Image 1 (cartoon, rainbow, N blue to C red):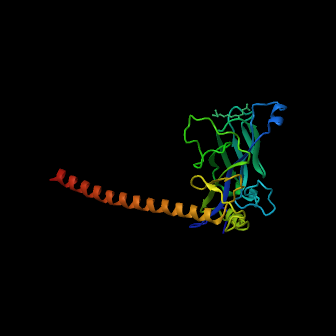
Image 2 (cartoon, rainbow, N blue to C red):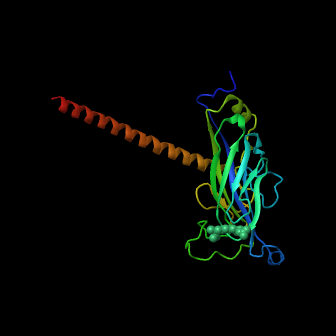
Image 3 (tube, helix red, strand yellow):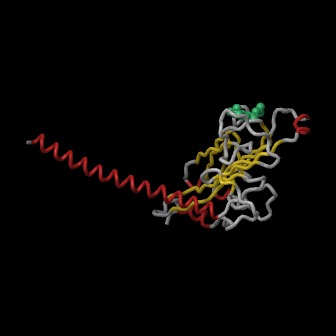
Length: 255
Ligand code: SLL
């Protein structure tokens, strides 16, 4: 079979996480820096979800090298940053910066050329503050809370789905299997689940993705599929009804 043939009926996915970690910059360090108004140092990243066994205390994910299917990750920062478009052509796919404010970061993932896939665009809201339990300010006009003494995390789990991939790309994907997620958290305090698929830290604990998150994502996908099927059925019935109506009207015109 030619490599440029799409494999019909096959869907394959690769899990990723994207998000950020932020730490407050100590007063002393800020005073002596060229940007004393920059209160936080943060890192935005795209990684594999499983945390490496030899991770540093604050690491989240990153056990697998994703360059076998990702060619480039571009992070689009706020325009207040010099050269806001940051291209990463090899792992780690991350940008570390300092700043004072939260903003929306654009993330564009380009796949290896053999994939023939279009680039994927994602967004991540940079999180610097330990907001309330819902993960965001309850009152948008309220000032942010004081800098957390712990690292602040905000990560989103996602699955990149390749539908009917080219045979050569499928071969590449199947020869690189993602490291499975652990079933339970290594640490006793589970991360706060702020909203769908997102984790942040509870009490300064470094969050970790587990199979529970994977199962939750699968449940959400099932629910979405079911509601699409219900909608399709409704539309089909409506279409049949409208066709009948049309027939009737046609007959009336002919009569
Ligand atoms: C806000 N809408 O007002 C956001 C904008 C911009 C953050 C946040 C770096 C600035 C620099 C920086 O923190 N920009 O390098 O001077 O909160």
